[in-house]
Length: 515
Image (cartoon, rainbow, N blue to C red; front, side, top):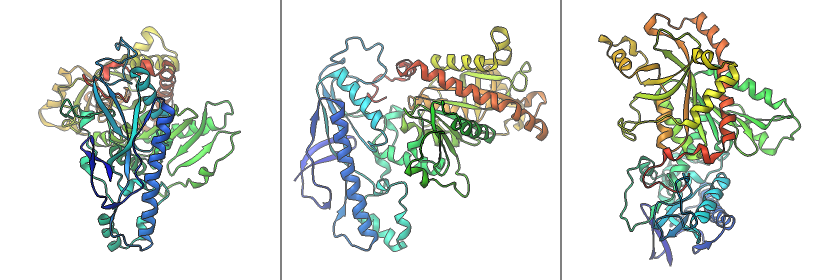
């Protein structure tokens, strides 16, 4: 039979005898509009997933298969012979939506239900900028059976240990070689004549992260919004929950739902509950990095995640949130002030980073600069002014712009000979924390606009350390204002529009087309 063999990121037609149980083969089709291309991707994906689910259910019920059970991700492909987009002669203003040059470009795709609006926009831009047609078909990258389960499926728990061991002989399991980050890291290489990637992520890599998001955040990926706030303190989450429930009591609010861990959904007053609301249940204990979501109908609401302490957590969660292609993420948290002129409660707007977190050294070498993004910086500064009602010199008194250092050593100040202090002084750092540089660096790495606004909670170099009573009073005084600043910044970023927010500063020489 005719099939598609996936070799790395390359599709090539071949003749082979089917040695597995798979859905009926559907030949590739061509599409000149985004609607029909997306519809075909959805149809192919649904057929593959239903095939895996039905076979898995039969396997759980005791049926034995003499052949391997397989289904494959759909792909989308475009071919162009021009160095520049066919319909646009000036690409200087484009930051995504076009391929880097002549050749064949493609990507495997997953969850076209979750990513419907995103995929439609990417397809539309490719057709608008290049003309011609998109080719949609079935790749030869198998879908791991674990990635076919619905959120509410827990069928592996119904099997014996022996049956679970046998499962790997019948179904495809996750293959790490198909989900590395070489494209995003800029290290992916193929011959010039080979098929080039359209997306930063393969379908399997995206599915892997969707599973991880459920595990770490305690909520389904469907609830994540396009603007994400990260914090390193539960105080911020407590306030976000309060504001979220408050918004649900306001019939005029732009937010339509508030989602908490366990997919517990509170609808805005005046909106009827949906069947999915009944599925939510508060977990017996919070997940490692719980997420909360203020939902807007257009998905441009706010998600907030408590990443806890440390750069490992910061890298972990942003590695996975990145596949959702958010429009921006911001870090709101506390920091150590390094200047004697700073006061507890002052804000620090990061315009540069000293990276001593070490968790991204392999993926993003230290010689790579992490620039401040003007669009985000302006929004954060304006948000501070709007919420505090401070202007001019008074604004500069409470907010300092400068370099933020992030370290993986929480007790850096106890190291002998004051070597960290010397480095931080030489770098002109004004504040220090453990997460901000990681979040900014991963934003740069994954082409997600990023920013950092911290609040000085102690000054260890000047004898002002956290004490229980003082800390609790400080947190109560500052958290509400700081969080409102972050939410105001999201409003300002949302109003800018994506064309301005997704700037060319995050593009490499030969960037993928998908944003």
